[in-house]
Length: 112
Image (cartoon, rainbow, N blue to C red):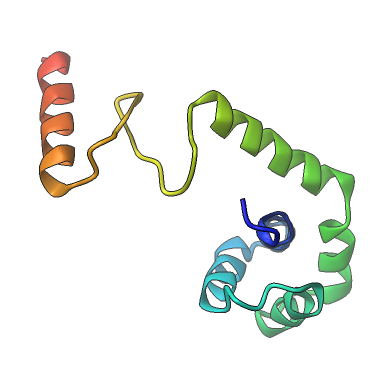
């Protein structure tokens, strides 16, 4: 995990409290080399958040606990990075077109 992963996750989760998770998500990916604290706050303003409220949420223990729970859930599901794909509850290891097709076809046959 890179050093700015937790701050970026907190920034997006805090934005989500104001209904703008995806807007912040997109802003973070567009600016993935500039994820310092000042920049995160700047991005909050750029996407139209109430920045004072965003800062309060960003710094709240609840946001950090949410993220840590998500990380623990991911680790429990054997997620080692993103993106990780699951088909019918099984981790897809061959991420080529043919690999996905084979995995999906096998899952469909099991369901028949």
